Length: 134
Image 1 (cartoon, one colour):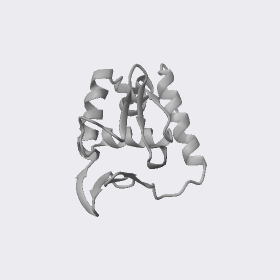
Image 2 (cartoon, helix red, strand yellow):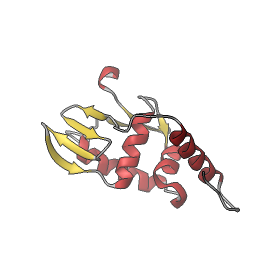
Image 3 (cartoon, helix red, strand yellow):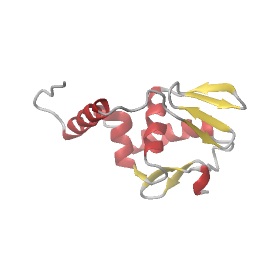
Image 4 (cartoon, one colour):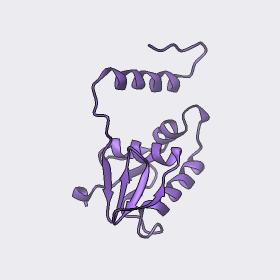
């Protein structure tokens, strides 16, 4: 149900294939909420709540970032993979990704300077820590 015009980038083809596969499987409509300490990120709405009250809303890129990190189930996601997932055809740069991670941390971490949940793995990428993994 999709068409890719030539010339195309391999990354675009992979993203479109992933989208077709997602549509072909019956997945639940409601996305889960992620508990990160006192903060809770609702993946369906992009809202960040603390103590039940909406504190902020994620931007589209922040939402794509936290969603991709959550899909990894606590594993490390490389910087290149995150750039491709978040920026797609825009070819995000590692510095832009670092700024995006910083903004996400400011919304979900108690102390963004000492992150507990969105953790940098030096030289590799980032990891979303889960409560059970701590």
